[in-house]
Length: 289
Image 1 (tube, rainbow, N blue to C red):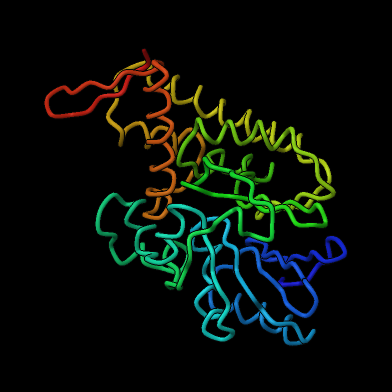
Image 2 (image 1 turned 120 degrees about the horizontal axis):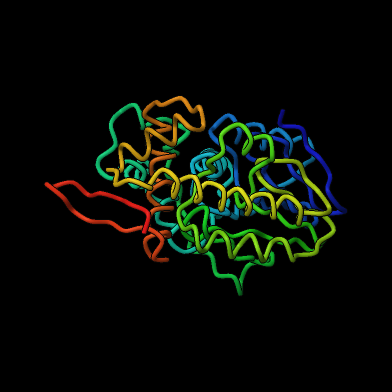
């Protein structure tokens, strides 16, 4: 873990739970994301120190805690700039927004841990025109997520793809906007690059098969939800039945992660006229249209 892998002449990545990109220019380096916590930041700094490299900037793909967790440590140690796109900059500046968004209120202590709550960092809103990397919009998984293409034609894809193994085991990957995510997958499937580096699965020269597989899984989850909604159900019952169908284990973290995703599916299906939402006896009931 935390092995430094050379992807191209000036482009590297650190093999970690959420891959960290390194782009070298002379004796300076820019990072793409910073890992999950202070320890990830230390591992990055050890690689840089061993090679006599100075960290100039961190370009975050999005604001999930496992991608910005090393920001604060590295920024304090090196004085580097931190950039994040759009709404992601607000979440990076004030990370309490992530568990608050997921929970839908003030998050209880069991949700205030490093996997959902990073340390804040001083961040600037990313200006794609001023960025030395090509910025690739990848919305859907989170609000304004982006990827980056380096001059070596290596594309870092953040969290827009899950591995086949993950999807086969858990079935539901976290999504904020289903329609935007499907559009992103279509664009990713059509991309060409020397190498693609998704954050949570193996780097590959051919990303299209995995993008299509992820797309198929979105539609499969949607069909399962429609099957469950043959009768009117409150959200909690929809979630309970989906967990049982997929043999998932319910805890507070999975409740908010999968629950938020299921709400996003329901919103997408409602907007598309495939489900209805009606109130009965002070209950919001969802049903297949």
